[in-house]
Length: 129
Image (cartoon, rainbow, N blue to C red; front, side, top):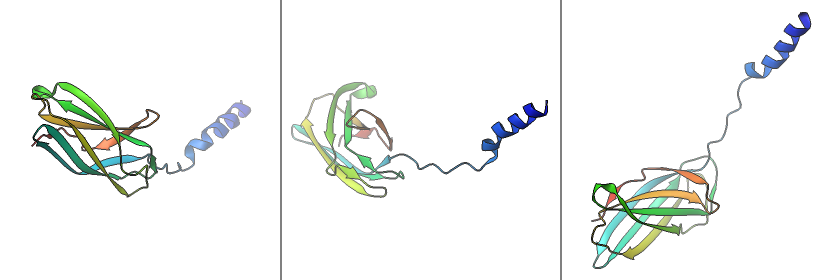
């Protein structure tokens, strides 16, 4: 019986030790965005900041174009101006796409080139001015 108690104590010992602080993965925040219609083109300009504790690499920004009622009509992908985004650093992005009459808003999403999702704060929707 004492061997069982000793064995259980050994198994529970790691639970009593203080947990190591984990670094948060890359997390992006939309700092600034300007979405406007210019004749027959929609122009999107903005800045993202890495607010996580790890470097973000090979970021693909996905723009979902929405109709009234937030129904998705079209999706476009593009990359940031910087391939690597260190913690606390910012990067600009810019998109242009032909205007379609029913497009009224956009929503953003971010992922790595390999397809892993990156948490994005303030993804929208943003109104097309």
